[in-house]
Amino acid sequence: MIAGAAPPRARRGREGDAAVLLARFVHASDLHLGAPPEANFALAAARRRQLLAEVADVRPDWLVLSGDLTHHGSVRPEELQASRTELEGLGIPYNTVAGNHDLCPSPEEAANFPGIEVYEPGPLGATVWGRTFGAEGVHFRHRLGPVEFLGVSLRGGDPDGELGWLTEALGRPAPGARARVVVGHYPVRPVRGEGPLKTWGPGHLGTAAQALGRVLADAAQGPVPVVAYLFGHVHVLAAELAQGVWHATPGAVGAGCPGYRVGEIWEDRIELRFVPLGIAELAECRFWSAGNPSACADELHPDYQSYHGGNAAERALTIPLPVRTPG
Image (cartoon, rainbow, N blue to C red; front, side, top):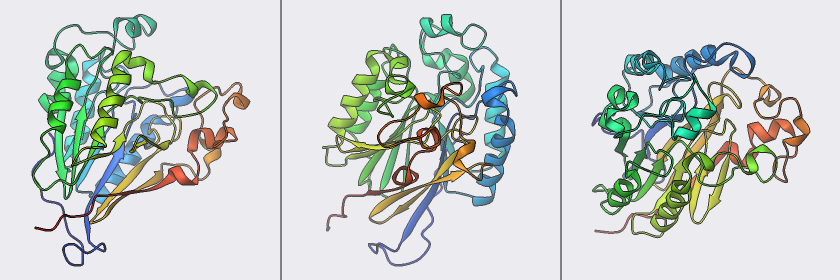
């Protein structure tokens, strides 16, 4: 699959020097392969192809995807296989977690979206997702320089015990890691203060959303702290510091705020920069309440465009890393 053991590339400078760029990665989400080319998803296929072309050109050390690679993945296994084939064709180490369109989180979700999502009882490894992406599609660990990334594919209520795996893994940091970043699909807290995203998103996980939030907050206080949680699902660009952890989305390739983030790991920081896909202006961002755009606004996002495309602070983040301890 998937992420190999390729070492990160140092660009210049001396070890311990803040000028050393240790690794570059790309974070993307919500590609929606197989979505019907209409309404919000009219440009999904073209933007997915553009993403793959740009990743192939950038040649990052690693690609991480936070779910919804497909639109009907649990119903149409061929979509998941096509997505894996595309990713493998890049020849770049990658990891991914499942979204609700890849791995239905609950029977209730399946009932709400017949023909799009189907719930698969039983262990994660036996689902279409698990059979397609293997053990590392269920959960993964990957280190880039001083940062260890841990990804989990969660379902509502966590029937698979993935939060137990994450908690145990956080108790065993990779040698040389000074910080951790967790990757999932769902938000654990609302990403907007008003409008449809004031409540939508965390509910897909049920009680597991609050439980994951507690795991992240507790791990932020550890000796090798969690400094960020990267996720998708909401189809907007978002970033917020909460209880010591940055919660950040990369936008959404398929619809909403089309784009991705380029992450750079330096000796003393992680920088996350939003890269738009196929849009010259944020006015082209649309997904939520298109028929009533005035409903999409809050104090930090005063209009429909910023509600989807984020504000200046969300488009470029700097996340400090703990200092290297002597010895």
